[in-house]
Length: 162
Ligand code: MG
Image 1 (cartoon, rainbow, N blue to C red):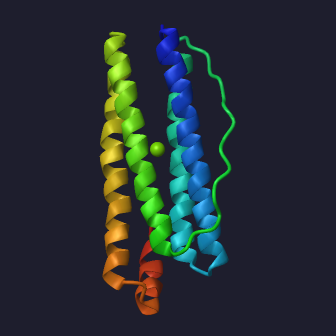
Image 2 (cartoon, rainbow, N blue to C red):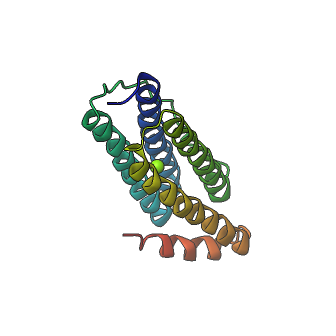
């Protein structure tokens, strides 16, 4: 059984993950509106993945005899100054999410909730990947330095995401 404190923290994380989906959908809308279908595809795939993350926490809360509460989502931006601005925001957001997972882990340890460990270990590893992916694209955008040809080529590359 989850403690109330941990249950509340998991519910907050469901919101964080669904909020992530919404933020990335907003970024997808920005890219779609600028005729960058590869970037948009990458962001839509990212949004779907975030929904799955939210559902992992959702199922876990019920499995542990807790109660799911769903908070209101924040309105995401659908406008960015540039692809770089969007990906820098995505990278910063993933760093925030990593911190929220670390917070959950600390809390679970404080509550001696050992059943949380496998789930949170999965998320800790996932966040290493999420940060690396976002940072990698920021670095590639730095390489092309706003060149239209470079952006076009990156768009073709990002279209290949599974
Ligand atoms: Mg996530």
